[in-house]
Length: 342
Length: 119
Image (tube, rainbow over all chains, first blue to last red; front, side):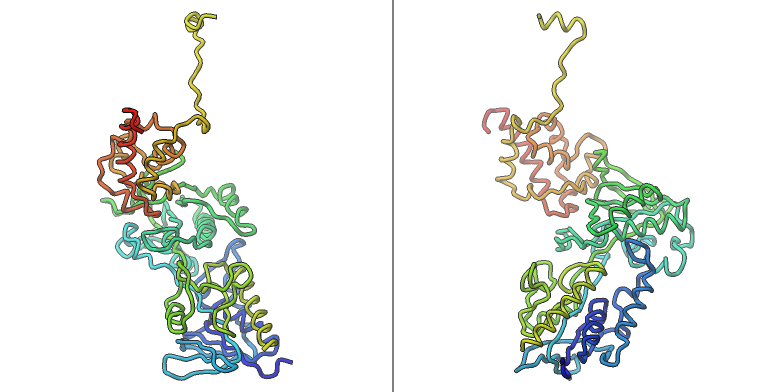
């Protein structure tokens, strides 16, 4: 029924892998293009997932199985530079000048984590014990959360909204997943080291997904995680080489300072640079948040302006894994509809 | 009954703590909003008040000032706004790009005008 129709998927993260797997299952030939040496995207770096602490490995395993299909040709170490519609086909061009023709294409170029160096006041790259949420996942994977000189931390602080909801770095939007990631990571630290005090510094707690609010409650009720409402204004180091943060405890209405052993910056999501280059070269619209602008926020959020080219996942907006997989499946449905009508 | 007599027995009526939004005066808010529209953008994160040099030692809290002005509660602010040293650290922190320093200046100015019946 589908003949030998061929769909090109640009990006081999969660969205790309799910889209490729779903297309192959429906009988399409798929070329899955990944710029890194192996598929998996940011999920490769994660230890456990919210809201149920499921090992990230389980989802990685699912996705690897998903693309283990003779109809899928995986191409790694290749970056899609340009996509255009030509005749009845879609033409994808690579950096080395070669190109690939397909009947349709799905863009799944994903996101990049905010570069924490850009919030200089938090001292990332300056102070030893200021790390990002992604680096904390590395520590969980390694099995120990310790300071730079190998000590167990007596106190850990997590700052929400680093690089999100912040005009100073030109990111007005909320990255959605950082609040619940902070709650998840706070619980993991408390479980690992019951003696360690953990503090989350938030502006608003955005527990938007199923079981997120329950996880937040569990953090308070079972794990005694402390939540302080206020945006941290700066971090410094005192004479005993301990981090000191300044914040307003907005609910108490007074400035607060606190010594910490490890400061975790909950970095947000930004449009990937490769996605931005592809948008520019292909004449695809991006929004004020710099992610791909879809044709309609309600009814066409997998559609691009190029015929036969669709969007999947976090290249359109920050998203969790559940929504990314759903969005990828929706992109496949749009692609099939397009190919059947053509 | 005579009010003075009641006082002798320790019965007084406390001033209401309620923010009465129907009677509060929001002229100061209008004055500031017109001249510094970024005032509207505050989402009360407290970054300004954490960075505030004056606020470390004196009752001066820009986040609270913003809220009180919006609610039309300016009585408590008269002294508070005068404590600002206009150093501008709050400006560097604000994630919403509010021109915080100008907000304080305008608040002080509006209160002066209000007292002279010029508002």
